[in-house]
Length: 261
Image (cartoon, rainbow, N blue to C red; front, side, top):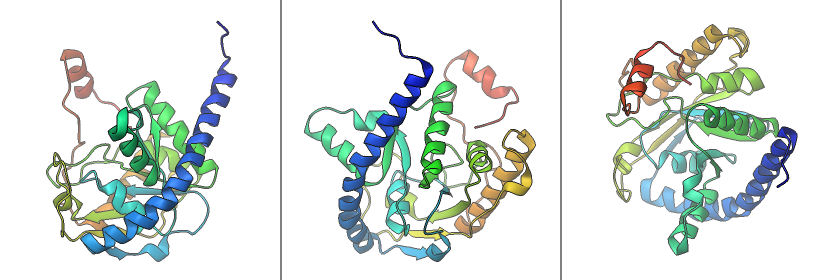
């Protein structure tokens, strides 16, 4: 068996991403033509501040996260194409249902990535940086996972790291009502619930310092979360939205001081 060098692995990963972007491109256009009018008809979304979104160049949308349909609301409301990283399992299903799910995810601008901690998290950041280097727009949720109680949780520093490393402006986004349109655990969205999408002014976070500085990442993250809070008007939780730890080792790791990415 022939072993690939790290450079070869990187080129292969880049080729995979380019192929995925091409595959998603046509589906995104079709999906937006279908989904956007349908979503506007059903949910009558209020869209505020979209004029503040730069029409070209790298952009990071940083949003609160209340529901699965957040990843539909932002692309529908955004004046430009948005890319999300989504669990690769959404794209790997078999049969008709698997193809439908994969097609739907590509239609909303999702790119498959292996999710997880450690190397998987670093790989995800690399993927997002590559999209930004190509002048594209990406969307992330600084809280890390959906809020199940409607409160806004503390932000993890991965978004700030990406912004400080690439120089891309951050557009804060406040979503209101998506948790009512499709609550966590619901199989299908509820019809007729009004959704609001608010885009804030671009944030230039460079004054906080370099991406390698933990203090700079924390200050930049807090600025992002303050802007999201002003838009979403949620109650502040004041803590991280932690996934319940499984096993004694994971519980100990969560209890120890560490930077949440």
